[in-house]
Image (cartoon, rainbow, N blue to C red; front, side, top):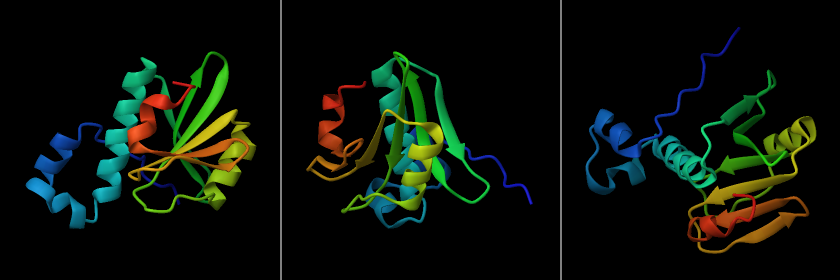
Length: 133
């Protein structure tokens, strides 16, 4: 059975309008994660000055929210609306299958830290400090 394509609405204001949300209603809405993903993807693509961003998924369910290739490097981004980002099964599979040079887990927290040698959790306030952008 084929899954329908993943569609990002990169403008979170349009998404919130389509969902008839006002103010902070998104914080308790089931589409909070999708809104966060679209917002962060738009920020990363703007910072990298590229429109060449890719979503990646396997038939077994592993996914990577954003893959960009910049200066010959494969850089992955996993975008999570969570307080405690960590290495997931999808991250491990994406890192191995795509031979990523770096992988960043972007989350709404205030601390950035290494998860392992090639994986870094990045709080939203540190987005501009990512050297690969």
